[in-house]
Image 1 (tube, protein in one colour):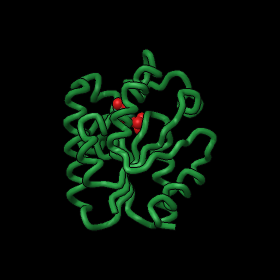
Image 2 (tube, rainbow, N blue to C red):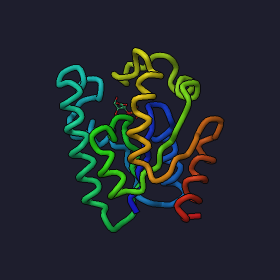
Image 3 (cartoon, rainbow, N blue to C red):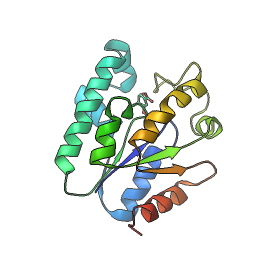
Image 4 (cartoon, protein in one colour):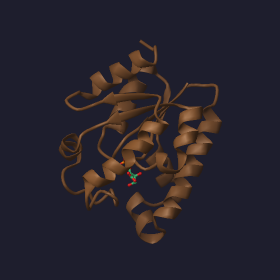
Length: 165
Ligand code: S3P
């Protein structure tokens, strides 16, 4: 099964991905880390030097490659917050996509009010969350409300939802 984790920046995708990997023993990756590896520079540098559209294209090809590589076997893939923007349908049809839904309060508690490594974490964050929510919902097969839950509890819920525990 290809299990993808989607949600806004700071919703806990990477930490939950690591916890799921520990509990399942499956291969696990962070899509952002694969992009950085491929580009040879940081996410912030990609946005600064090439722009968001270029980043989205690279993000989409890295995602497509991982899905093709793991089709028929087991993978945990923590996505970047914007990965579903161009790929909601692909995620819904070809992966078990879990939406980690969080409130602004939770996001701010995880990230703070500023993060130089996240070029899109600025402006009206609630408005960006609201505009993404329908995209995340359309890609998802399952939604977990993560407010007030520790990483271990979120991972536990996901394993039960997917019948893996
Ligand atoms: C983005 C989220 C980031 C990263 C990039 C763009 C977004 O990943 O992919 O900065 O558009 O929401 P995280 O969700 O891991 O912060």
